[in-house]
Amino acid sequence: MDKLERHSYAKIDGEWKITKTITLSYEKIPYALSTISAIQKKLEGVLTPDLLTPKYREENETNPMYGHCYHTTQAMFYFLDTDVLVPYRAKDWRGDDHWWLQDKESGIILDFTMDQYLSIGKEPPHNKGKISSWYGWKGRPHMRTLKLIQKLQPDLATIETKKYSI
Image (cartoon, rainbow, N blue to C red):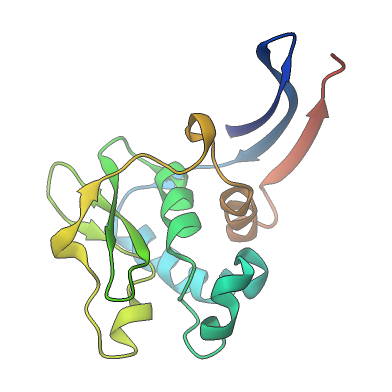
């Protein structure tokens, strides 16, 4: 089993200390065309509004991939068993950041949510993309990312929380 940790921090006596660790135990899957195709199909059933911040929910009602690019990209980065994928992002026509993965060896773009553009007659902003670091402090995985991986492996993936007394 692979593990992905998300720490919470508090500043105590002038130093940042870990106060809580959320650990996702899951199984990585092979980075192959067949698994990517299967993941894409499975994502359509698990990318639900509960994974969205409120600002994306209204448009998501008519465009089901809208608002899911960041946590989906981050989840696939950790979920696929490879070290050749790099996160990219670019501003789209709305001014929103759009995220996807790109294979640094082949240049292949893996954009699991690009249908949010294609379904409304727009092109994803891949031509403006740049390699990007994850949002958030210390690049930690987002909770939505952990929840999405758990949804992809409901019978296998588990999330545990450990609190530290400081």
